[in-house]
Amino acid sequence: MSLLLCLSLLSAIAAPAAAQTWTSCNPLNSTDCPSDTALGISNATFNFQQSSAGSTWNTTAGDITYGDNGAEFTIAKRGDAPTIQTKFYIFFGEVEVWLKAAPGQGVVSSVVLESDDLDEVDWEFIGSNTTNAETNYYGKGNTTDAFARAKWHPMATPQENFHNYTTRWTNETLEWYIDGNLTRTLAYADANGGKSFPQTPMNVRLGIWAAGDSANNNYTVQWAGGPIDYSKGPYTMYVQSVRITDYSSGASYKYGDKTGSWESIDIVAGNSTTAKTLAAPPPKTTAQRFAGLSSVAKIAIYSSVGAAAALFVGLFAFYCIKQRRSGRRERAVAEAAYEKDTAELLTYRGEVGGKGYTEIGRMF
Image (cartoon, rainbow, N blue to C red; front, side, top):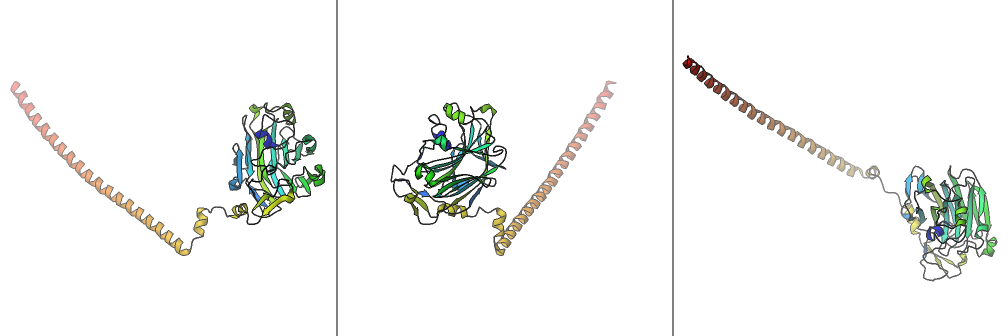
């Protein structure tokens, strides 16, 4: 089963295992398709526990979060299908993914290699199948005998632990490995005489989708283990890291004709822009930038900081002295007013007291 076919054509799936049939420009039908940006290097590593997918991946559906377990692809409600895709292509090579599949009936976790003319290589994990992983392949979008091409590989706890899933791809064979152990080999000639053998530049896509959704046909739902129960979610697939090697090198890959054969692919000479992006050092921290300054620059900064600190202390001291003087003046004024009020009060009492005694004497 293809992840991206079902994301694009959710209500029009015709078989329990079908190839991805969407492409922005199919070189089998047009000679005007843009060339594919090449990776062009070996061992490009993406550690999702330390950083996001960054500038070399696109988020093509939903939202991806990042945590201690790496990239998190979550189905929390109907319609969720988070997916990321490389902005670059490889023309034969290796793709290694450290992944923990999502649990849940009707939930499918996927690793897909996809080309513009619909060659495809799949890893898929059914959330309720705790003892197997599935592999499949397609050539030029041909879904004939798709179910027969799918193979199930016994393994332990794909939903509970991280495992290494590796695809090794040449113009002669396709190999799938689980935790370093070869589990399947497909020879070129065994794929319909080579007609269904994936052989054109491919990008890498990671995602999770609800194959058990009621919008899908019964075959798809049953393949996915049964209907999904969204109320029991969320369901999350985790990807710790991805390592990708391109067996070819160059700036890009261009289809030379409409045959879709690997011999027709032109490797455009030059330096890969993706390789340049990956080779660029990460942004420096403040401490790293300071450490790289010259001694003169550091002294200037220290002097500036010291001067600023001295200015601050001086201003603060001036403020305190000013406030203290202001307080003294206010206190003197207050004391003078108090003394004046007291004197006036005593005078008033004296006058009132004397008058009072005189009037009392007259009464007698």
